Length: 296
Ligand SMILES: [Ca+2]
Ligand SMILES: [Ca+2]
Ligand SMILES: [Ca+2]
Ligand SMILES: [Ca+2]
Image (cartoon, rainbow, N blue to C red; front, top):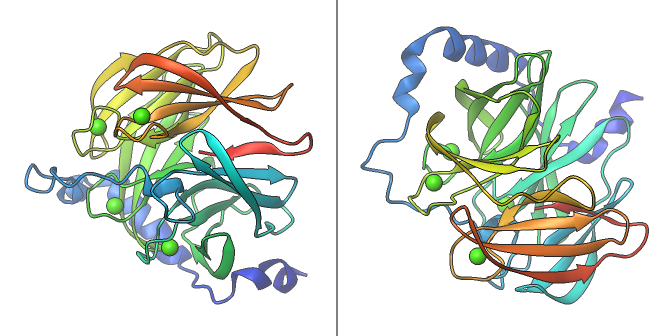
């Protein structure tokens, strides 16, 4: 049974020992600080466009899902160009959490998380086509993979983990699918959750995008590595009609924008931002009835 579940993930590498050892070492010893970015590497801008640009035309796209099926909607800014089916996720607890280029071939890949086993996996894609899969580290009990972003400026996506009991975050620094080191990030306030990551103030450091599930308020936590160095409110998006799905630069001027999805009408809405300030909005395409927006 299990073999059948993991078939799409072969070849894979399991590294549970490395996972737990690395996590504990990093969490209980401060030596992991050596992995923090320095000013010397701070000038390298994370490519927020490429994160979700599946056909490599310079424009971020949408990832949709209908149950385990996924699809890509190719956009030119907020204009729908075409759609294509993408790989179907495995059964039994696997979810698509985020996308980024893990193996450095220029193509965004899927980051998957299994709610039951807490196993992570990377699905390497060429545009919308599944190439191969590999297991990433398994996260400890109580933790979940909630987002992906490059937090130490090495150009390689890292995991953002969240513990819903303690509301603590952690960053797991990866080399492709392999855990290199780990450390705690800031603890979220009650009722706030991480929606995604992006560099909102364009200082070359990846930031947290937070959402208050009670009030619909958004906030950006400016990060330096896994240290919070500032916090500002973004626009409130409410809790009634639109879900905040994530952020990427859809207007093409560099600043990440909010992507919202209306769960009733399936309309998408883009809030254009300059840093944390809303400078306009526009409707994007409306998704078909059975499909929901997954990414960004
Ligand atoms: Ca890739
Ligand atoms: Ca990294
Ligand atoms: Ca930043
Ligand atoms: Ca923008």
